[in-house]
Image (cartoon, rainbow, N blue to C red; front, side, top):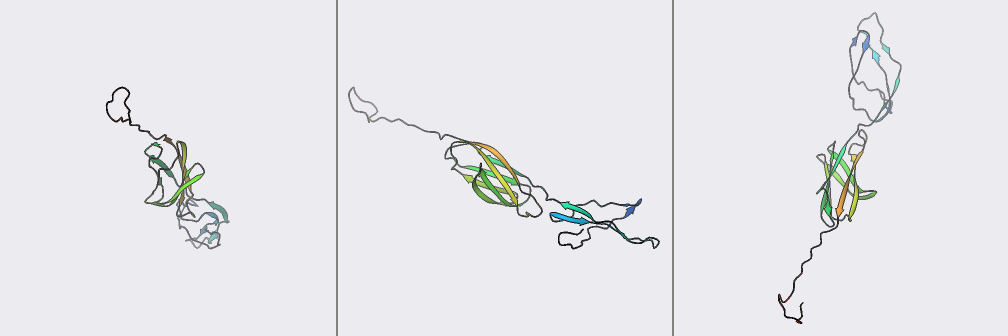
Length: 173
């Protein structure tokens, strides 16, 4: 393996079976372009050591996931709701958005980030959780969304009359 800095790194030593050598693994290479090549080291003095032609190779980022939930599943205007994002990696940040509007950016701890609010207006909202892993070099960001409804606040109306009983023509307050 030879990365962007052109430093050669040995990734594995494998045996040859029926004239073929095979490597299968998950080395922790940084994202970007690199060059792979194989070196044959003969244990038999009848054969010389040999190198393969260099082969360009592209290393991509590993994927991540984020799930999003709201509690309660819907609310009334002015009620507090908690949005919770669960992530596939234990650290990073989650930006919570209502459509394109940023609500908050919270740190991920132990695969979880949460945001509380009671300021959403009445209506249906598309809440997004945009996850940025702490290791942005080897892992790609991810996002998820949910539809969340804020209903009108429940209005309570109480009628009292004073005095409790009156005669005809008397004033009621």
